[in-house]
Length: 221
Image (cartoon, rainbow, N blue to C red):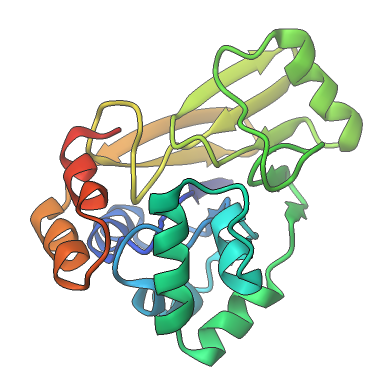
């Protein structure tokens, strides 16, 4: 079965719309961080709910729920506070209902199996570290988000990958990223799609969010 994997939308509605056009009717899973950074938190959450996307909690989602920005830089903290002031109660309730991981055909988490919200797992992690994550699950495939950088690692009969970020890529490619995962064959393809960055960036500036959040979208960092 082929499924679509997305992550780190971060309130970027124009990017999410273009990704969903590519995915069409495929079943979709999201590795967290629906909100934060960009200007469309309610619209993103409502589209995720409408499309019945299976989502888990990300660290920005959690911060919007709790108001705790202790571990965030000032720009990220500003965006979280802005989101908390703007978001509808029913959408905040939806974020509050999200689990910290999903486990069925595969294990999906935002950070890592040992630190579900906050650990940044990069493509440069030693294989031994990556294999250690499988001690937390009986599944042979683990999907991660959080870093905004895609990677795919095959470790014998085990697979671990990150689909990259829909809403704020950080691999120097400004296109929205997502992955197609064949759960039977254990094959992954990361795909990129162009979207209207001007629309996303202009909304960030117009709604009073830090301008750097708009500028970085054009560079993919």
